Image (cartoon, rainbow, N blue to C red; front, side):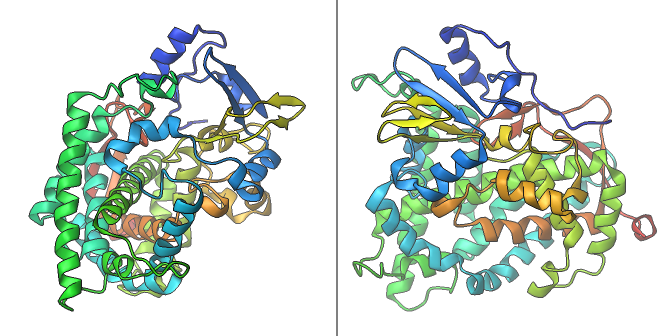
Length: 455
């Protein structure tokens, strides 16, 4: 069977020093193969204990049933705070709940319909840009999906295209930041208060520039709102929504934090998912042809997205194999007992969509690309227990519905215009930066699609 690429796991036993070196380089290949089979695994360091849980019952307890007992750990937040500040992605408790009360209304069903024209315009722009590449030469597709996803975010959030001067600057700086910032900072492993963050000069520079640019956009929008001249987009909706409990709105600094995570979550994760989907379809041209045939009937109508069943199943399967956020970390606020083991207060609880989605006790053919599984009861049952590309429970990604419209839509628009083929000798190697990307990019050949080849 022709299986999609997967990182080579590390040996079962390594020293802490070796593990830290591997982890800083790539979180995925730093893990042993046994995690694809284990219900739980424990990792001890001189400073803390960590438990990875793949048991669906335990995952429900942590994320769905008792989320306040397992807040987000700052061991990951330490690496993201320079760019994300005090955003909803990093906060806990009352602060997080207040932020979600203000943000969530902007992503409700009716509002998603309102964002569709901006998504469609971004898709048309992406298809037009690809025309210059559709000559069969190898093209690094992650760069193109990043461009398209960033365009979607800026059009839906601030009603500006990616070509806007500030939008283009944010996009360029973020690409530099994404490569310079490892998912974990040294402080994640050494709980010494005086230890410096040890961010690279490039990480500090790009974070500072990105936040300055976002501040400029946000301040301008606040002025438009005050003048009654603001467009009715996501930024305006969020800035004008008052917390139903306190009556307060986000101030400038709080809104900058939220825009930073919208860009990270809405651009970086979507770009990763779309690039891997195109690669998987190049590996499986019969599924590419099915999705392309379906896309021929696509119209500029929100209701048409609901008819993209093949595109949606293909996108779901890509999210299963390559979840953009490969791991999440929570912290135990009190002693627990997991599967007969003592879990001390302060222990790190690791939930890994990467391993859960490929768990060989849960999924049939876990490493295979099988979009058909989503139309079976067995596949749907597995999804209910062991599928969380957007997390789950109260902290489920607020933009999950947004992503499940954007992904199939952009995919369909690209497939009805172009064919994507593998480049011989250029198999991508998945690694985790801020999201699951390819170590040396994802290279594909792009050609104009002949309508008869999709029939």
